Image (cartoon, rainbow, N blue to C red):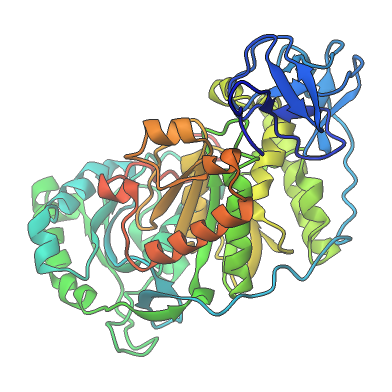
Length: 524
């Protein structure tokens, strides 16, 4: 894979020998010469970075292939050298052969055992960060929760509590106006429980209004919430319930803030008592995410993340992929890697549910990519999905989880989530991911406390433009570096971040406003 050399032709990226299109690793002018398969073709129109050039003629109505898979169908005749995009490619429905569990492989062989420095919790999980959380049960207490966390900001706090990464607020727009004990109520409680029980959270307090539907005591009872034991204590040695502050009972916002601040101050000594120790890489739970994707996402950053994911799993760790709406049209590649037909069918069931769910609202599951994705070269949901799936590497699919359900055991998991980045990553982190890797071609800047978010750029021009927000440039693959090499560098970076090295989003303090639990039903 290479770019233009001197005045010679640009060598386009042909991902499979039988593909109908190649990817531009650099802008190609009209009439520019492009080298593909050792021969030269002429571009019939300007082709931007990450966009596609036809390498063979395709008749109208025929499938067009990239990654060796169908990415759409020609909406008009396509000639060699044409720019292939939304003007001549459409996303017709087509049948996929799920071939359940037919290609399940043992996965990558483990390299030498690797370690990182993390916080070993009493339940055996390992934190990569050490936070105290202020949890709002309802939007009505969101500002109050933020006021509480803001009292613990600044350099003085970190100087006096070097082992505590901070006090952060978990706020959201829900908690009331929802069917009591309905699906949205259950999801919200599962997400909140996933965050307060997260290995990256040492302690927490709950803050409510007092009259909300999703009230704190219900959350405590249904999710069996308890304060975790202090450092050095055995699991189950603390059965104390979490501290709850309700604005109506405390006598207003100011009194609630003062009471909760005092409670957090009381939790700080135990939180500060945790220390990083050497831990095996098997304790990593890696969340796989892409957003602001472009035509190079499936060529550079996503395959590199797939290598890193396989390396984590080979060490005995776990990785979890989400975004059901953005594997649509590529799900058959996962069902073939499922460890059993039952696991594969669970994935197909989620696809069918999404087809029904979107249809209820007069939408379509393939109403994608976004305008930004299209500007970056992605033409159909099938193309986007095939590129997104590269994040999952080659490991067998061991289970399919509901939204925010805990990731249990090693291996590759799939979690049913929307494609919208904040909602998806909220579910992945609630499931227990202690490191998040986010690939982006257009330049997404998401962070999500308490889990560090590593940003990987798919192309060098964007990386150079947004260096303050990107952690790794995978665009070097377009210049000749191997996917394997970048994937291994990413794996090393994951271990460094898990050991405490701050990510770019952490350096600028991002990660509280992106908390966004999935809302499925009506607001009442």
